[in-house]
Length: 429
Image (cartoon, rainbow, N blue to C red):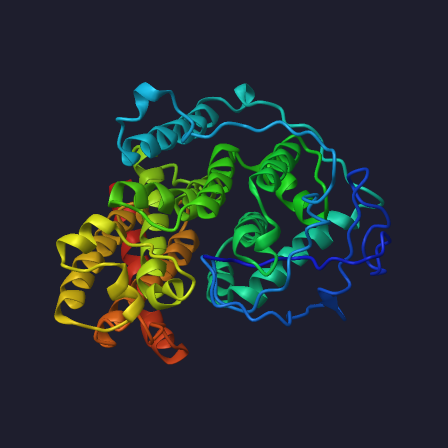
């Protein structure tokens, strides 16, 4: 379940590219970006990766050393996540646990709307060298998005320039995080490495970025009320990927989908903005964003059943497979049967319900452009489910995707829906 990586390890401790700052931000760490960048453009890796939660494309190898994940003897604090709850709370469903996070995120926005003066004053970002570093950091984020998530990238062009930069920075952090457990060097990643990555995240939120791309995220959180909890929870999802390859029921799978994709929705709401005239509660907008993330991840899972099976993974509820008269052996055999078709129809119906829930929050965004951006993404990703059906539910050997021609044909529909959403919003106002 991977995204993309951004740096390639170099034996040299010097920065090889002449257009970046000359020393690393964090003492005792060094990185190189020459192997990723060539003549100002993102250089594709030799490693061919199968897919991404946040876009499809080739992935470059992850630089463990640059990430600070191979530094010996460094003791780091580890922040707890919502999964680490007292024994008495284990009876809570995953949706209840996640909704508690939603409520806390919404409360942060509500406090900001009541009084900006009450917001915590975030520290200045420690930037090296010169004032051009931050501009270059955002430009690197743009290049990564444009290279590895083309549809997502073009969707962001509908946003205001400031929001566009912030979304790129968030996207890049998510992609790097996901690659830790799904990239070419995933075999080197263990829970301790993820603890170090989480400690590095804490530093980013303190305004002490480790590298250029971290600096872009640090700058973003000074401009928008982005909270650290969804970022921590995404790392928890990476921990889950290290130790789990089966999910006994949808409750377990729902929590996983929240960790690895629903969190992105919660990260994005403060940047996308809620329309001042919106009559919806902040909680409902966050819940819609969460639903979109869950829907997207369920779509990924259904699209990639065959690819995951070849890696020994089954991201499907085990109890529902059993109820359908199916087992892991049927998944590994990869045969489309009537039992499989019936099972898949139920899974697709569930994913579409989450898209329906997400659609309810689209009209509440802060402008027609933001509505168009999210509406386009929602429609395109939802169409992957249509393609699975068109392939007669053969997601074992056929990869469902929406080609360029179909995307172009769908564009007028996406735009019309966006305008309808915006008109609805204005009528309510």
